[in-house]
Each structure stands twice: as C-alpha cells, then as structure tokens.
Length: 157
Image (tube, rainbow, N blue to C red; front, side, top):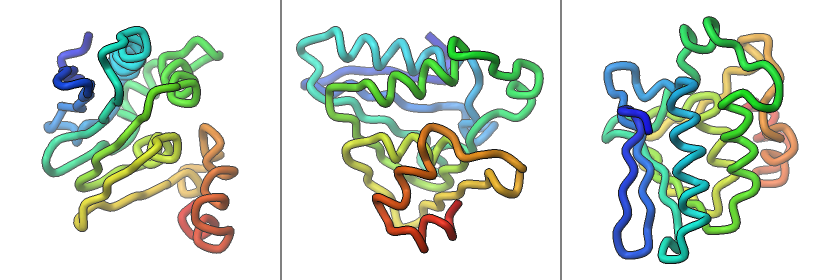
C-alpha cells in the first residue's frame, strides 16, 4: 500500500482516503496501484458492502501529479492509472465519493463512475483537458452529457 492512500474498514464500509496534503492529494502511480488493490480487496471481502473514496478536509485531489506523470507516462493498458480506471468501471459493490475542495481532471472523472457522490458547498470540479490539449479520459465525454445534458457537459469539458 501507499503511505498516501489510507484504507480502513468499519461496519461494512471500506474507506479509501487520499492523504497527500502537501501536494493537494495529487495522484502518483503508487497511489493508483494502492487504490486499485483496495478496490479489488473490497470486492473479494464479503463483509464489505460499500466503498467510500475521499480526500483530506480541504482537497479531494488535484488530479495527476504532473512530475510523476511526465517521468512515468502511462503506456498501455497495464499502466497503474489504466488499471485503476478499469477497476472503477468493473466495480460491482456500490462506490460512494465524498468531495471537499478541488477535484481536478481524473479527480472529477472518477466521480462519474461512482454510484453516489456527495459534494460539499466549497468543492470545485474542474476538467482541464482541453486547456492541456488532451482528450477527456475514461468515457468522460460520453458520461457527462448523459448525467448533465450536452450544453453543461460541453461547458465543463
């Protein structure tokens, strides 16, 4: 497991907390691997009925850690980020997110794959793909219009 991903279980709920406050919970390959392992463990543990993903009190996640991302660009379907995104789409147990503060890029994308999302008043969802010259990931451009309509989805994307 990663020191930046804290996993706990109580009363049928597995809680996955991103805890890298000094970097606004920016996601690294190691963190993606830890979250994938936690989700897999949740599916294989009958006593776990639901998974909750959250961040710190002031930030859900700033998205990908750009230094880690540039030093280790994802290549192929076996990259840690790809395994994580695939696991999100395969989850059979309910997936809930609790969002406070920023949820940037993949931080917003993963919310589209949750069964229930709680968003605090101070939360900010941001998808900077176009500004970065990137295509939205993990079916974002398909899921967003289904959830919020084409006009609002186009504005966010």
